[in-house]
Length: 321
Length: 129
Image 1: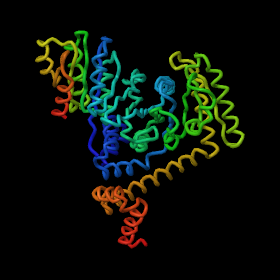
Image 2: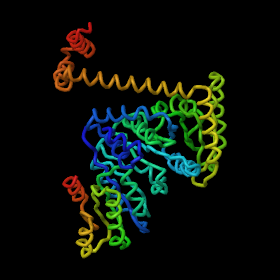
Image 3: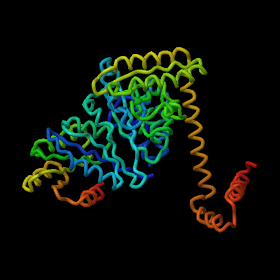
Image 4: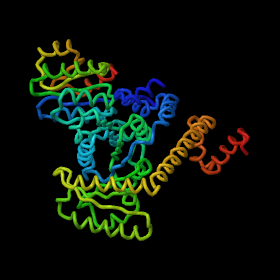
């Protein structure tokens, strides 16, 4: 494991790629855990962006332009592009990199496609640990591109320093922009395809929604940019706003706060997963489930009463009660 | 959890006909594999670097222009150069029967010509994985 970690720190491309598979496949959990723990001291230098927005908004195309600009200032960029897995076959078509393929031969760019494998929230279960691998390997930027399905896609906020929300004209009226969910996670709002009809109207609608929000939170300073990825228009301006937003996060301490919240979520997640796994093992849930289903189906037991009893027995056995 | 098989479907060279490649990509998705699609007009170098970053188990090369004897072996050689020749390469497209033995000799492990049922490709992947 030390060996794989060392290769990652030396920026060995194959080692990075293989360790992400190790994280994704979960075939060897203890090996994965040892790897992440070994990399941990080397993490925290990368700036993490999340890029989200509805399908077809132009997330990949914009990202392609951003990479171009970041490479001009010699920054190393890693991209994790998440696409959905089929709930039926478990297979996936991972096609985001199609629009970034001109960077394929650039050694300063690493693009990894990731299937969601049933994980909800717009990213994959392996995304959080994969960010650490790229961070430790010395990438200046790690950019997560979400699936792009909509209102529930908020997990990217918990993983990134800055969330770029890409919107396009023609998706609906301002009520869409007022709904809870995805609109609330954006730090920078990017209206792509700005040459289309309705782009200016969309901008004023977003400004209106944000003005309501900003009047309640003094610390927020959202910015809205307008771009056309295919025409390479407005990209420099958007990047300047992203960089200045990041500087303000860094300077006023919100970045450290965000990163602490990220660690808090991560620890809670690890704790819940591990407790669930041991409880499953002790209670033998998978094997006993059939009997329980039968009891509940035949009205011999009710769900809460049954499980409160079983879990009570389990805790008693552990002497927790 | 079990390991997921990842497959890169790539089109080297200047041929822009990608209906076959897209069909195979979609069918392999439906068979439960994770398929990465590069799009058309890829250089062998771009294909090999993509395969390594994506840590794929297989590369499927599709070519209809006639340059397969030139470009397929180039991908094999570059993979060897990068110590990644554990990745299995198969090919497809308009490839004359008489070219197939030569391609296999150069490291293309299987060749599927037009009309191949998709279940043959899946059976090959299952036997080689």
